[in-house]
Amino acid sequence: MVCWDPGMAEEYLKNYQVVLSAEESFSRSVALGLWMRRPLTAWHVLLPGMFVWDIINRRRAIQQYSVLFLFPRKLALDAALQTTGGKDREALLSKTEMEIQEWLSVQKVYSPRVLRGHMEQIRILLDHYSRLLQAEGGSYFRLIRNTYRTRENFEGHLARLSTAEGEVDQGLAEIRGGTAESWDRLRAEQVQVAQ
Image (cartoon, rainbow, N blue to C red):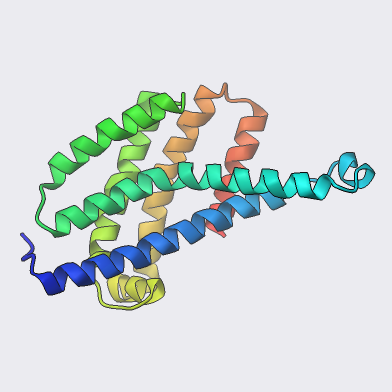
């Protein structure tokens, strides 16, 4: 159990903000990359004001994607902060599972497979974030470097995370009927996340 003294809590909270900011920035980058890959339509040429409409739609799409992308990550990060403060990991995971199940139901994408994939993703991220919160470093890059020490170690974490995210994607594709369009969208997202 971690000793929860005020100095330690301050360092954890500082690292929490660094990690959260990095995740938010990453989600916006992925969403923007997905949006920018969309081909221009004839309307963009025919209607001079179409770019304004595009900007409004892009902002909304980026915000929506960021919320969807960040929700499980934020739950994992919050749980990591609580576990570093001495809370019971399994109780937090149980609570998180109920929150994810409810969230998936509201999004109309619940399936046992999607839930399992998200929970595996959250377990991996919980371990990752717990290590980052306890690391030294004033930036996300330094936290990563001080936590994983080698590129191979970090790439191992990313491979495990990618496998869990793949399970979520497979479940989502099944829910959406496994159409070519749904697979294309999921593949585009995977490529953008990998970059």
